[in-house]
Length: 121
Image (tube, rainbow, N blue to C red):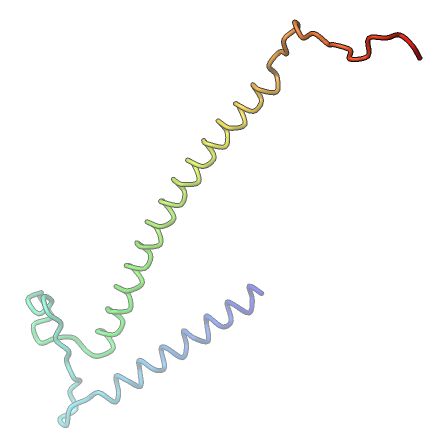
């Protein structure tokens, strides 16, 4: 099963590379220069005054999306881990209380009364 998953991942990766190369070759101006995409707040950075190529913009946005997804998943994993630790602590307390109730001595002053007062059989 893992082998099939890895093969599918490699196929998707190859298709993505082919798609990005084709996208880069299609997005050219009439003079042959590539179309430049300007991203807000990034146009002031050195080297990106004119914008970035189409394939660079796609890879940048996908990478940012993957990074944000990992951060969100990490936060969820940490919160679930904290909840699991809390539940284990509550379970341990309940088990300790149950064990103490099981091991508690019974009163020795219990009187057993016999309702049958006659010794006739």
